[in-house]
Length: 316
Image (cartoon, rainbow, N blue to C red; front, top):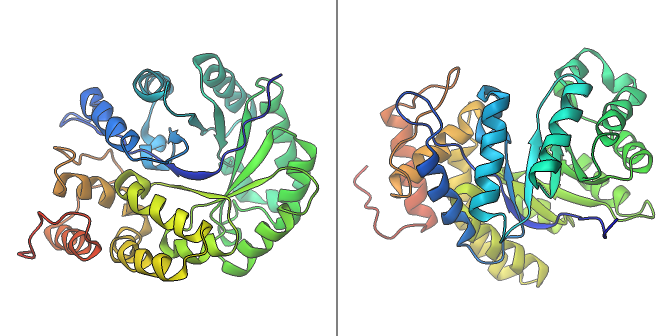
């Protein structure tokens, strides 16, 4: 086997354009992929994630999205494919298909079954990943949610998972708790093997990166990958003044993207792409719904304050 892929750096998670009949808009999606690919210094792309509205995609659509992504940008960038399934065997089959198609890495979502008490049964979490690992040799990123919601993993669980399943080489950390996040980073960096922590705390990105995260995997990268790259480089170069200046710009828009209700965050990102002229439509599949004019004005104002587009006016 070749050297195992370990993700790091800036990894945008792409959005999924739909047409007015809520079918996948392949032309718009390819354009979106090319836009993100054009940003220098990103290290990979993630498809079939929350930002792709994975909850509303059929298995055939998920396969199609992966194939389109590989065809459009697979020669230039590693492709991380989300594996979203409640049953371990179903997840394993999806993982096998993703590997056969040419994906580089897998992002493993927790089973919703874990909501009913898997936090008390670490062996259940490990077994879920073990079943998947039997079907694929690809590197895996474990998606870690907030503990309070029932789908998150304690730091010790993450340690046991990475030690038990060698293919789990990274954690996408959404614990949403700065103390636990730093504990995750410090602990997993000291377990005696390569283990990458990818933050998805986009609402407090600079703080997370300064704690020592090895990169970021974020839906906001579908809109502001260029700013994320600049911030990542500033933190790596220990240029505090530059990082703070970039963080001010990023906060102006992420404060809008990740406002309450959080469920609309990727919806807002789609609308931002329309406002910026990068996409023509911002259709979302139910249960997500179209945003109102007041929300659209807030998005436009955030884009102006961030300096993303000098062409926008403040006539909101």
